[in-house]
Image 1 (cartoon, rainbow, N blue to C red):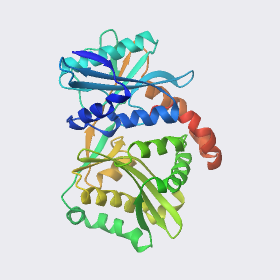
Image 2 (spheres, helix red, strand yellow; image 1 turned 120 degrees about the horizontal axis):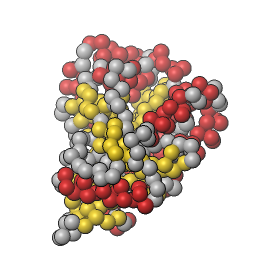
Image 3 (cartoon, rainbow, N blue to C red; image 1 turned 180 degrees about the horizontal axis):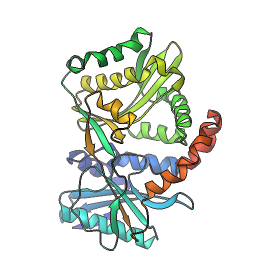
Image 4 (cartoon, rainbow, N blue to C red; image 1 turned 135 degrees about the horizontal axis):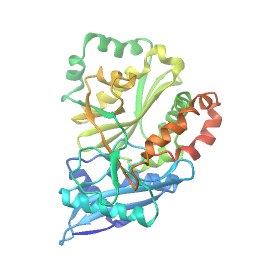
Length: 350
């Protein structure tokens, strides 16, 4: 077995391995790392394991995010629910993680965060292991063959909630890069209302470019005004929803109900078997919203590998630091948050 850094020419082989692995997801594909690197300039460490015949047997993409306030961490993967190592067996996974810890040691990086979609049986060597995010789950819905069957399986109340915005004149449209401006306008305002710095528009554009055939933007609008937006990424038989936003001033029209139905309808019509609603905390509002569609919780196995037992996982540190600033951020003009938000957001791995 050999472990080496993947090069640009390895991308097709890398992606083929990811797509054929049972724990594949779009954030492990080479395009996600490239989008991060091109938009934010973070250093990448793309670890690839191969056998004696040169066949790929495992991958571990890593992104180094370093800031004097926000932390110094190797992420797999930042800005996403999933990442980490995938391999043919536990021995290969352990070897990849050992190489990651060596990179961290050589570069004085105190934390490695692996956002695994499944449990690992591995050895972390001199690094300590702890949970990086407690009580977080993905919400996943198994899909029937057609949208009509899906709709028929919903409770009457849910069907009524989907039809209500349609009766109020709201409609949906989906597309690609041509809808980016509309998406970002709503996305930025929603992030301001949540008290969170917004991603750079160039990062969203880079994701759309890298996933040109897998990414889709959805808009809910009335006349010329957009009420709600989302982006989906297809990978294997699952359609993922990394971002969704709506305008609070239009919440009475329930645009979110029509938005999520548009994504689910698209997923069924295009042969996807599952829809991944993304990360939630059990019992909270977003969890209950996703649960009403029939989605079930799937545990997330986020791991923090640290040099010392006392060091808190990076994501927890970042969250606590921003809680005090949220109320202030919510009072800023959206135009200002578009300028000052992205330089901050690039250093926040969540």
